[in-house]
Image 1 (cartoon, rainbow, N blue to C red):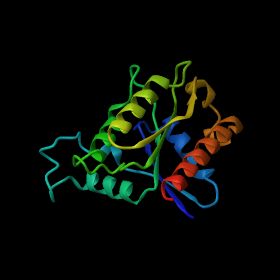
Image 2 (cartoon, one colour; image 1 turned 180 degrees about the vertical axis):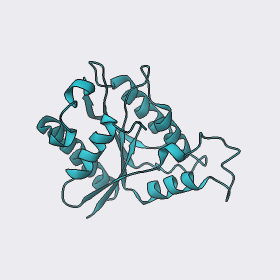
Image 3 (cartoon, helix red, strand yellow; image 1 turned 30 degrees about the horizontal axis):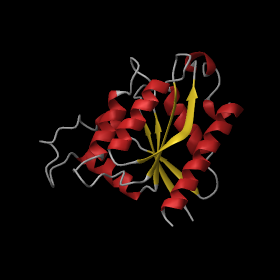
Length: 186
């Protein structure tokens, strides 16, 4: 069985360590698992129900929803901004939660991981992302976690894809997510 995971990165910064972490997940995805790194969250406007009229939703939001509809599960990469989830990731969750009663998450498995500058690796933001995506209809894997502290120093000269400890952690998260996808499709 082939598994499709949609990866959403909550950082828009060109040198984002969370973006690099997502790239590492794509690179190290096991056989039979395709991780699609969604491009274009910066172009998705802030959610506004007035923009989300049938047949009139912005093209970038329609593309996001289409990618989510094709996914078997989700892997969210959450940095931490002022102790909470970033606006870009929360906005993606908001768009995917609508229209009401037809969430693109639709009970699909979701894992949230990330890295941040602080010594806790962004756990507050990741917890907030889990909360939001759970309310939005995702089947959040509450016990599947990977929070990498000290990103600025840890990844100053090493890409996460080349950090054995990070690759091991990501591989475990992807395996647990894949196991939940398989269980959900039985």
